[in-house]
Image (cartoon, rainbow, N blue to C red; front, top):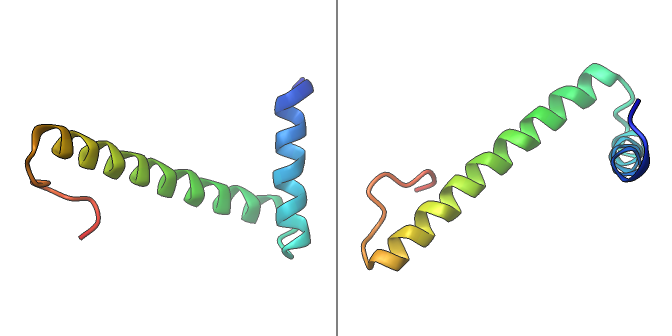
Length: 65
């Protein structure tokens, strides 16, 4: 069973979806998966930009153009 800090964070996320009108758990799962995917893309882009800045080069294959 999930307890403590993680449970509190999950409950806050669920409450945000609920108050936003998404009450179906499958819809919540879809939306959270999309948000995680977008976060991974953003992290990859930031890392690539940071590496390019450190090396003084431009991005060869940017995630976002």
